[in-house]
Length: 136
Figure 1 (tube, rainbow, N blue to C red):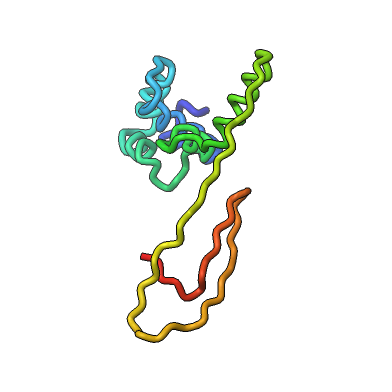
Figure 2: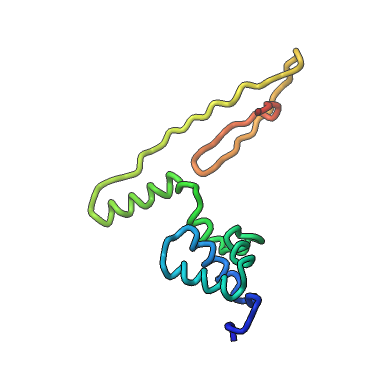
């Protein structure tokens, strides 16, 4: 059985490491006890590797849920719209008018050359890029 093993079984590894890693972020008695249990079973080195996510074994979904990056504006707006709808509030997310200025180009030559451009889109945002522009 699992109690007699000195090395974490491969089919349990991701779960054990994810729980240990999460215990450093979430202060729950059950997670602390689970972490101590795994440290007792598989050693302090196993625990330290799990806390550092050595080898990237922690479940990606759990890592993304606890990342330091705030949710996107569109995600927040979607949640707010659903909440408003659920409570009968007439609310629509604001329309964002984002205008990006192209950075100034830097040239080392005194001659100007013809520029060709391309447009890149991300959702409803489109940005025109000149091919000979240098961005720093």
